[in-house]
Image 1 (tube, rainbow, N blue to C red):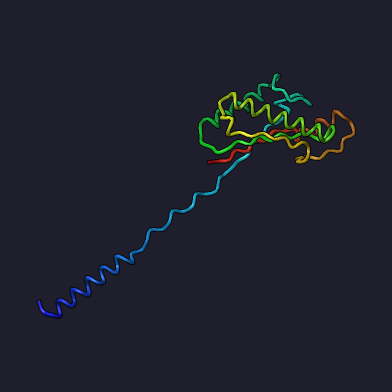
Image 2: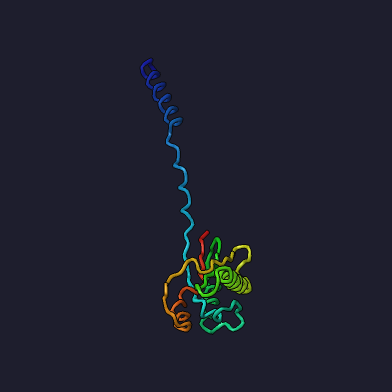
Length: 160
């Protein structure tokens, strides 16, 4: 082997070693996507009597809604479930917050009884501060009927 061949082999070996040292590094894994969430609104009137927070007289429609929600939660992974109670503006603000909180607690307790882990569910009442309709009816019965959409329980499910 002559000096030229040895020099060529040395250059090739050095190039191979250099390329091994500077080989492209694998790209870091992409960060996981942010948690996705979705909301489900339940009519408070199908769950509770007007001005009440007990599920004792739960309508068939309300029971169907809550059972379907519990079944759905049992069939897919999720991070947290937030139960948010709302009221209409009839009555004073403190009473409305208390009522909406008791309603959210009742729904949370129902879902826990149906198998939703207690550590994965929160409940809060917001009173009447987030209305979805505004009504100017003077007649009490008409006002109660008009404000029905504001009496609701929202379920916010945050994915893992």
